[in-house]
Amino acid sequence: MLRYSFLPSDYNPMVLLLGEAEDLRLLGGTLRHFAAEPREARFEELGFATPDGGTTILLRPASDRAGMRRTGEGEALEWLLSPDQARAFAEQLYTLASPDSPAGSEMLGPDAANAREGIPVKASRGEFSDSFLVSER
Image (tube, rainbow, N blue to C red; front, side):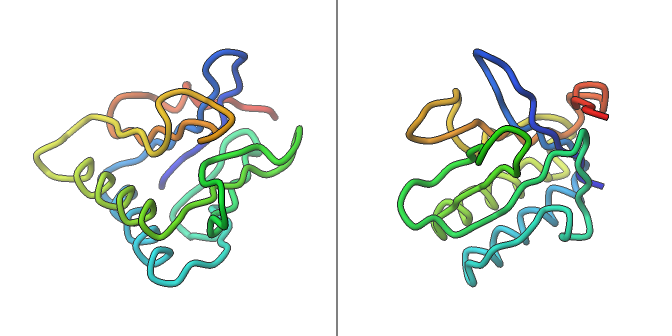
């Protein structure tokens, strides 16, 4: 199961996605499908992803500014992607899920939070334990 959480920080906020190879392949397939047929999807409804700490992510087609953004305090995060970005991120996830790569990570978005590109999204395999995910319960 792909686990994810928004990790708030004054200097380096990020969304952390933790999963095994199959989880990352499933997310890559979802992004490829999104690239072909862009439409809104909730991560919780994908069937292979589960949030920690109440994080909600809405995957939406980008009309102008792409990136992961908070819509408000305690609100869902929006991941606005163009078809080209979704395809590129899918390829990064497939590379990370490769049998030749037992551990590693990929940045799916900016390396640091900024107003133009939004919040960094880091997909990780075998690098972090679930204790890195923030629990807001």
